[in-house]
Length: 319
Image 1 (cartoon, rainbow, N blue to C red):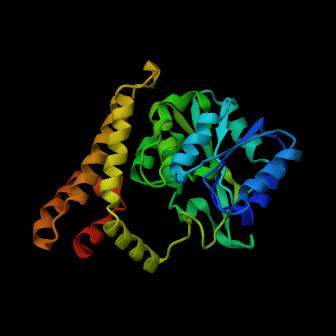
Image 2: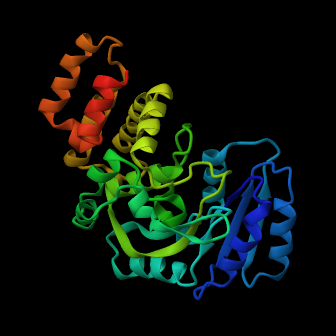
Image 3: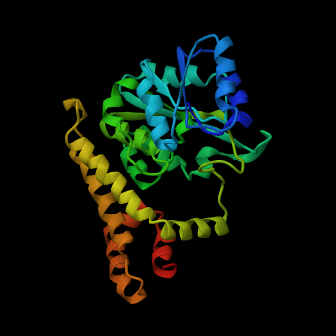
């Protein structure tokens, strides 16, 4: 668990972890230089928890990705689950995610759905997979062993729903020095060398509030327009290219020879990088960027690595 200024909701999350039917063997909490009572709440919980709780504090703020990296590095179990500080875990979460990994030794990582709630934990009428546009077709591709295609297109596995085998930690660490990438990195890298499993039921209550770092809201058309505008303003395509270039570099020389990516995975990574670099470098002139747009249409990469017609419209009309 990574915490930072999370005192308002941390106690409820810790209580839900303590109420798991399958108790964790340990809980590692890394606090990122909080100025509130997060550490005090964690320490009070540790005194009475029915399992080992290890609390580490960062003298200087690292940011969410690096803080999660530190927490993952300190875990001693065979299976690692990531926990945010403000959600609620349903009592069967650990049992079901660990069980999915136990039933199929070819799975390296597994993730579940979750219900999106408001700050008072009232349902908002949709789930995480709907908010992430993770539809039945993509779910089928993940189950069929083609998860790298899906994860190269977009993030569909919320970190707080993930469980993965700790033996892949040398492949994962260090996490890329990019904002909020730890969950996407874990899902993609492990799926690149093993298989990903799904638990098709909500195992968390994902709390949506004003202080969420990401905030998985269900976007209407106006929200999608604003998100598309932010992508252009924030160099999202350049960051995506960097993410997959780092993945390619890590997979080309893995610490374990068994983690060598297949030609198929390498081709997916190369195509995603090429598509992202084309979109990053498009001209401000509509006429000058049209050849790039047409080229990506003819290659089919808008549909495999972006959002199809929506991304085409973004590149033609919004730059």
